Length: 432
View (cartoon, rainbow, N blue to C red):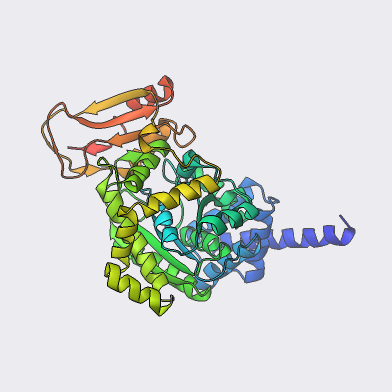
């Protein structure tokens, strides 16, 4: 490294340090200041302490609209960017709701419809398993940029871990310092998602935004605020967006943890009789909304075909799923990413150490605590232990007889199972 390069490096580092101090005092940052911080984080020249200071400054003081734009732009510009031709579809959930694995269903539906949908997914942050953790059961998710282009060219889609290459790298470092607290600020959620979408070349995007008392966003007013922030950034980066807000009081589906979640998504794709219908309905709705967004910028001939043949985009998504075109497409994606395309949902078995919680009285399920579900599933070993998880035999408003199974804990070792069982008295999952 030349003396000039060293000098420039010191200048940029000092600029980044000054920016962190400034933000901690509640002051607004310029683009150059934010870029300097993102560059230091992306290149791992900031240690965890400095990164935490900057991240924490966003919790306490927040970012204004300009700073949100600057943060997103800087995250994108300090990493690699992918470029695909034409309409590039994408969907994302803000997370915080365990067991809701719609991506493994939505991506193959949209890809089977003929649209490009390269999906960059995260590992677990505030839930027991992320989409990347689940997809990893079916195929490798740590792909190079070259391999991603190859997979998408073959299949129209992919489901990969965004942290496996240099896409918005500062975001992945920040995620690691946030993980121990199981917490993300609303601004960070928006910036993190949008930076990855922009870096992946998305042009048409649907955001799934659940709210409820035991998930990330507790109140409708907060959900509306987050929606406005998504719309603001989408306008700045010329992305067509639809944000779907919905109240949720329980997971969609019954399986929590990598293998259990993946098994449920495959059951929906395979149209098995034991598939979770609520997961299927949510996935069709998301896929249909995304297809509708894409159709608006598609040739008139395709719009006419969909209207005449399927009625609307949700009808189209339903047909693609029920006719098993989505399953065929998912198998193509799994094969292209290096997995076994012939995998069957019933071959996916959770951990062998098991404990079934039984109902102590008759009644109906009054509440399911998603936060406690996450805590217990992590104690069981998820997401590192793919077989760790919880299966909910009963969900909200369902009748329960005394002695019936409420839920079952699965672990890959006896120690984790014992610890989880002992923790249930402190972290109640189900209320009768």
